[in-house]
Every structure is written in structure tokens, then in C-alpha cells.
Length: 118
Image (tube, rainbow, N blue to C red; front, top):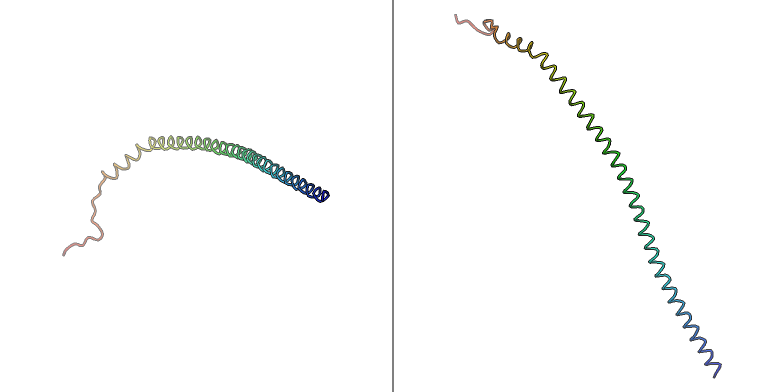
């Protein structure tokens, strides 16, 4: 009977050791999951910062070129206004003379479609 009881004791001890090992494995698994989650969050944050930095660089390049583009457009507009103003002042006198001559020099003529009543 003692050998049977020793066998049962050994089985109970083996079962307890197995249960302890399973619990320890579950704890390690939980710790590893937490660690993996933290590593993933850190990797995501690093990737997000990298992409934001690239975006800011591209945005700066685009906005910088837009600033240069605005300056060029402003310069072209100023030049066009200057040319139009000088053209206006240069041609104003001659156009006023032509306009006044056309208005003031009236030559009365009978219209070709006019029918003389007989």
C-alpha cells in the first residue's frame, strides 16, 4: 500500500509541478505580449514621426516654391501695369485727336437707301 501511496504522491507532485510550469508559461506569455505591444507602439511612433518629418520637408519645399512663384507673378504684374500705363500716356493724345476729328468732321450725305418721293 505504501508503494501505491508513494506513486500517488509522485503523481500529485508531478501534477503540481506541471501546473506551476503552465502558470509560469502563461505569465511569461503575458509579459511577452505586453513587451511586444510596447515595442509595436514604439515602432509605430517612430514611423509616424519619420513620416511627419518627410511631410513637413515636402510641405516646406512646396510652400517655398509657391513663395517664389508669388514673387515672380507679382513682378510680372507690376511690369505689365507699367507697360500699359506708359502705352496709355504715349497714345492718349493721338487717340483723343482721332476721336475728336471723327466726331467733329461731319460730312452730310444722303443715305443710299433714301428714296426721293416723286
